[in-house]
Length: 386
Ligand code: ATP
Ligand code: MG
Image (cartoon, rainbow, N blue to C red; front, top):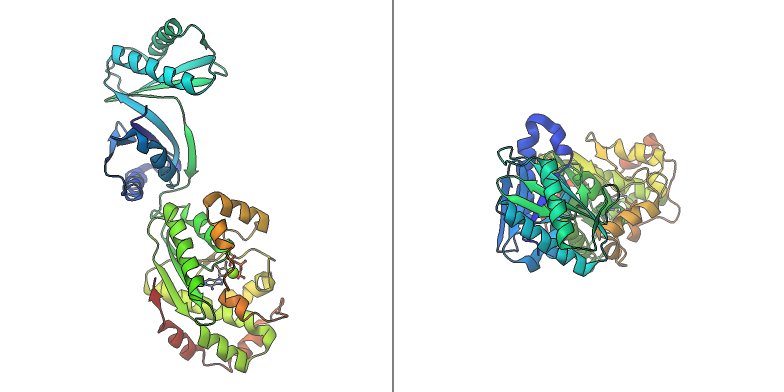
């Protein structure tokens, strides 16, 4: 029935002069997300973006992809016709017939929006004319202006667009309009959610994964790659870096107290992440830390970990409960992959009784037994782009 998708933007309308840049980014993202479809045309008609397809059977798949694009708030499967009263009448009746065949409909309301003021009939009058026409054709239908079973929207622009459904989508800001950030992506539940939440605010994401191969498996690698791919459906292309920190863990094990291991390793991870971010003009870091979730995520631990670098760290799930984070993970489709049971480098080397209230001077003292710069350089020499 439908041959195109009308796209409504969200907050980007608030952005005044930036609106064009924002719109362009969304359109870019639409094109990239739908590159697998050969028959797509994306165009603008009087300020609104439309995605036209020659093959109506694609529509559900197109909707599923476009739903995930940040910056879009609503999409409406629509029918495009010439701006001719008779043609609009006929197509509208066809649409209602189609809708009646799929659901039980008793009441309707027509809403017309006329952007093209050269069109000779005013919106209210046009809605009334269409209402009459529908009542005459469908004896069982009544008008209900307050709570109709279906709406019939008619949008008059260079062409006329008929639709009945407005589907709510993810919202947010288009990716690439708010800077860039490096996501510390483990194989867990929290960090993919954290990346999603920051990308949603318009941030271009790159990702960094620390492993301790051969202590962590090739499958753990594959799992993180897959998580990055799942995030790409929302965030656009993600460059995924990996760094081997086995030598760092070994050095810590040999030279430091066991209960300090996690905090020390975390400080190394932050320093390496900051280096990679700076080398690639990335503005900030992102982690999936949630206050109090584990020993390394108490306030005291966070203070000592963050003290190792200057770069700001975004922690969008810091105030969420695990169950809330899990719910988002399920909604965005990363949960099932995150719970696959492959070892993470931190769990392999985790101490039995990690510090929960580390003191900065004690940790700095422990680091004085390590060749911090040398270990960082060694780890960076294993940097790979997956
Ligand atoms: P997640 O579920 O994302 O693994 P978590 O609750 O297991 O998080 P931690 O393992 O304590 O938490 O890690 C806290 C954060 O540190 C993670 O959310 C992630 O951003 C980062 N991190 C932990 N391990 C790694 C890793 N191997 N590679 C990259 N980042 C990591
Ligand atoms: Mg983890």
